[in-house]
Length: 376
Ligand SMILES: *Cc1c(COP(=O)(O)O)cnc(C)c1O
Image (cartoon, rainbow, N blue to C red; front, side):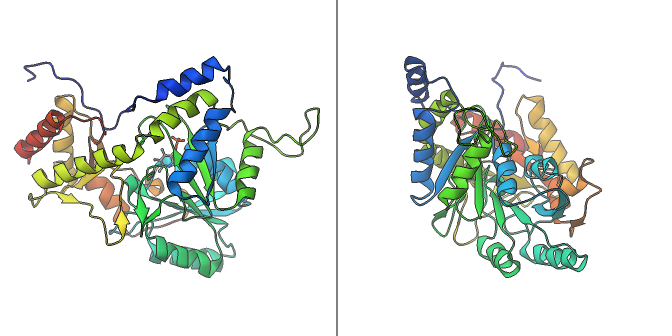
């Protein structure tokens, strides 16, 4: 029973840095209340500087929109097949459907919980044996942990199939000192409300090629041809980020490093106080991997123990969540081809995301740890 009223602890809630309102105010003062303007330009610049100076970044209305445009720019069209990591959020896969293409789901490996290079290659070979070469691969850095970049790149190059790098959860993560978002043919970020930084809603598309960014911006602004009147030779979208929201993004970029530090602190705290329990398993960083620890996740011995912990937390208003339910198990996708060995299904059954916001207090963390210790 609750004796003292304590505030709800969220899984991952927005955490403003202080500079955001200044940039939003600037947009009002200069009347740049539009889906373009100086905040959009500067937000894009700060992301470019963060991930590496030779990248080109387009700020968009969401991460989902960025994946949609990425697939379209890679030529995915009706009837094509696109490989997608099964263990992910549905937004990795939905844009494949928008384009009338068929998703082919591939299971994860256990070191990073991301797409298995071996199963990926097996899937490509099998699809080709069925007469269809996949058009693209959507690989995900889930919970901020980089996927097996070298191995996936090798498969991608061997079969000449481009990777869309879903880095929605991995802004600030790195592999061998290179930032996530820069490994695929096209990378994407999300600035949704629960991500490591937020614009309340938003996303970005990242490419090494300026031409790709230009085409993305063109499609994202209704594909308007160069003419004094409104002329269109392509179907376009309304996917650009507003200058108001980009103002929030500029302020958030100023605190991104701090947010990564805080999220990594949460992981270290949980690990230090719960890591000795034989019933809890933490996802470690393999050599060369740097995880932003967007969410700290633990594996329990069974579905029952996972649920016991989750419900005990819920009872005292602490939000935790099972790991992502694999796409090949989702009612909307379960008819599509999948190459699985049970790994993601097992992770889904036994795994739990703990509260991981960068704004958790020491008291919050202690409350969570104490409760788990009494329940396990
Ligand atoms: C959040 C998320 C997205 C989608 O981003 P939105 O900005 O919410 O559209 C895509 N993929 C993954 C893995 C995500 O977590």
